Amino acid sequence: MALLVLLTGCDVGQTFDGFGWPQGGISPESKRMYDLWIASCIAALAVGVFVWGLIFWCVVRYRKRGNALPVQTRYNMPMEFLYTIAPILIVSVLFYYTAIVQTDVDKLSKNPDVTVEVVAFKWNWQFNYRDGQGTEARTTASTLGTSEVIPVLVLPTNRSIRFEETSRDVIHSFWVPELLFKRDVMPGKIRNVFEVSSLDAEGAYVGRCAELCGSYHAFMNFELRVVSPEKYDQFLAAKQSGKSTQDALSAIGEQPYATTTRPFDTRRTQGNFNPDDVPARTGS
Ligand SMILES: [Cu+2]
Image 1: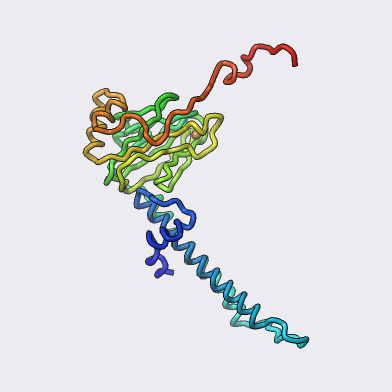
Image 2: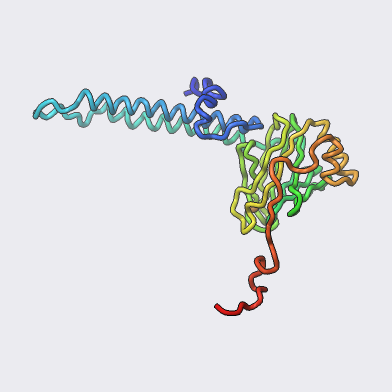
C-alpha cells in the first residue's frame, strides 16, 4: 500500500483521466487529496482484479463434471481467518491515509501570510482583506460583487492563505474547483476557516456557490485571480488608496473584469420578483 502511494500521482492519474477526480489542482492540499483518490482507486482495482480472478478460476476449476457432490469446504479456519482479517486490514490502511490527508488539509497555521474574510449573502460575495484573524481583526480592503459586476478575489502565489467564512443569511458554500475543495459558509456565530499553504499557478479561476441557497443560487459566481506576490501587494496598496477593484486590477496590468464568468441577467421585475404585487388578472 505504501508502495502504491509512492507510485501514484500524476502519471497513473493522467493515464486514467484521474479516475473521475478533477485534475489541475493549484494548491499543495489539492494535490494531496488527488493522490489519495488515485491511490484508493488503485487499491480498489487491485482488490477487484484479485476477486474477479478468483471468481473466474472457481467457475472454470469447479464447473460441474458429473453428479458426484464436490468437496464441501466448511469451517475452514485459515480461510475464514483470511477473509475476516483481509478486509479489516484494507479498511484500516484506507482509513489511516484518509485521516492523514484530512488532518493535513484541515491544518491551520499560527501566522498565515494572508487572511481573507469571505462574506456570502443572497446572492453574491464580499471579500475582505483582513489585518489579523477572527472577528476582532480589521478589514483593510474590500471587494463587493453586484448584479452587474462579478467580484474578483485577488490572491498571491507562494503565500499561505487563510479563508474565514461567514454568511449574512442562509448557508452558502465557497467553492473554487481548482482548489478541489469547498466549504460551507454558515450564518450566525459559526466561522468556518480553512487554509491553503500556497497557490501554485497564476491565473483566473471561476468560483461558485455550491450550496443551493435560493432562487438566484446559480448567479453566485466569483473569480479567483492568482497573481504574483509583488502584484498582490500593489493591488492591495491601490485598493487602500481608495481605488475601485477594477481600477486596482488595471493598475497592476490585470484584466479589470472577470474573465472566467459573466454576470447573469436576473430578469427580475416588479411582477415576477414579488408575485403579491401582480395586479389582479382578468378572466381565469
Ligand atoms: Cu449561495
